[in-house]
Image (cartoon, rainbow over all chains, first blue to last red; front, side, top):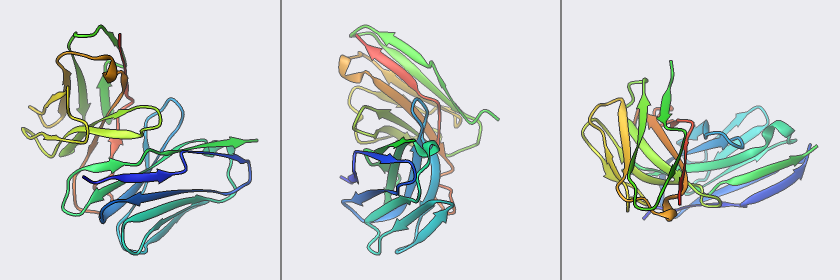
Amino acid sequence: GQQVMQIPQYQHVQEGEDFTTYCNSSTTLSNIQWYKQRPGGHPVFLIQLVKSGEVKKQKRLTFQFGEAKKNSSLHITATQTTDVGTYFCAGKGTGGFKTIFGAGTRLFVKA
Amino acid sequence: NAGVTQTPKFRVLKTGQSMTLLCAQDMNHEYMYWYRQDPGMGLRLIHYSVGEGTTAKGEVPDGYNVSRLKKQNFLLGLESAAPSQTSVYFCASSFGTGGSGGEKLFFGSGTQLSVL
């Protein structure tokens, strides 16, 4: 079945450093979504990418969808303490109904 | 506008007991999902529904049953709880397919379940 792998599992950064998390699917995706979960909270939708090679930006966050629609990345420039949390990618296979999540990358930011 | 509401928020069960988790959404969403979250394993899909009266299995359906008798409600049942079902359970809903953010998932606040 469809699998979504995400690395790294954890990342510790100093405030102001950049951060990147990577997502890889075993099958071609129709779209990929990214979510953020603060400690003790629930996942909150950040963005959805649909097109091959798509790049979207939200302030300091840059999201990319690979040309083959099987991989994606989230890059945060100049991290802040408010960026702390777990970032999940979630993919939906072509012709499917299920949204499958990666294991997440937990970001720790030291002030 | 409450969004997605889950009840209860916390529950402790003994092995073999049964219980039902309730998820309610007031956004007229077609799709509803139940996920479980365990440390280091992200969110794993248990069951989902693409409309009233329909349900389907996700990645980890064993030991769980679901029902979607009304569009706004999605129930998750544990018939005979086991310690391996200790987890945080999240319900989510979405409009469904169609792009333009229509597949965006809205999550409830979660249920912390412990099975002793």
